[in-house]
Length: 145
Image (cartoon, rainbow, N blue to C red; front, side):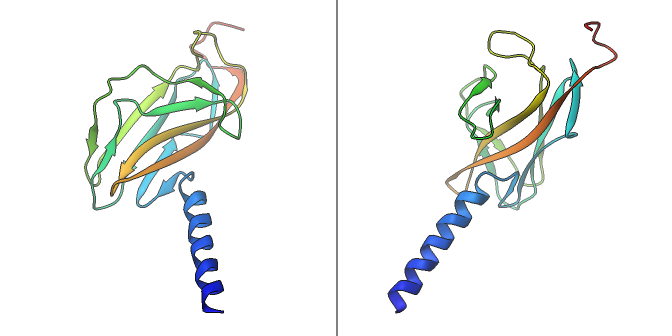
C-alpha cells in the first residue's frame, strides 16, 4: 500500500509540474501581455517579471515565439535574437513587442494567439505562455481597411 501512495504522489507532482510549466506564472516568474485584446496593426507588447528572490536566465535576447494553435505546434513568428544568455535579476522586468507579422512578413488574421517564453530558473527550464486576441478592428494609426 505505501508503494501505491508513493507512486500516486510522484504522478501528482509530475502532473502539477506539467500544468504549471505552461502557465503564465511559475515559481515567482510572471509573463503577461499588457492587455488581452489588440486591434489589427497595433503592437502586441508583453512583459516578463521576475517577482522571485532568485536570478532568472533567458537563453537569448528575445526568447519568445507566437503560436496560432492551442497545442502550440504551429509557430508563426519568433524574432531573430542574439544567442547569448541574459540574466533577469530579482524584481526586474523585461518587455518585448510583436508587430503582428509572420515569418514571411504577412499580417496575421484576427483571432486567438499564444505567446510562449522560455526561461531558466534554479537550473530548470520553464515555459510560460499568455493568450492574446487580435480583433478585426484596425488601430487608428493603421491606414488599412
